[in-house]
Length: 126
Image 1: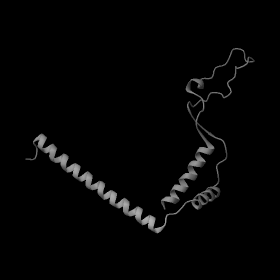
Image 2: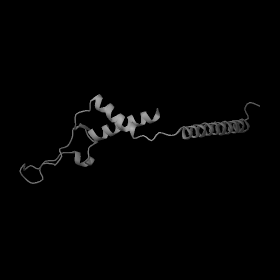
Image 3: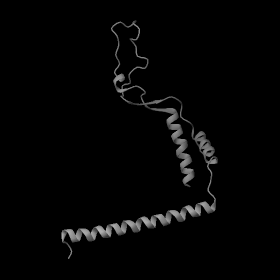
């Protein structure tokens, strides 16, 4: 299930960064449009005019994909996934459970020790 979600998210991000511009490519100082008093002089028009919205610009360059195309892309990405064997999944699951148990025991011990230390230092709870 996680692999399917990851593949869907990957297709979504690919779409997002392919078809949308998130950042204006020019520096902040270049966002202010300056024109020469002589309009026919060389260099009087900037190659890219300043945007009104500032640094962050959302320009849609292409038409959005249809839901059918999106589904097709998701199916293609899922076919590229290397699925784990039953043994790999079992070993990974057991490893995660053991490490979670170890982490919870560690946090419990540290919390208990710090609680006792605070009671001794502050003289509370006799």
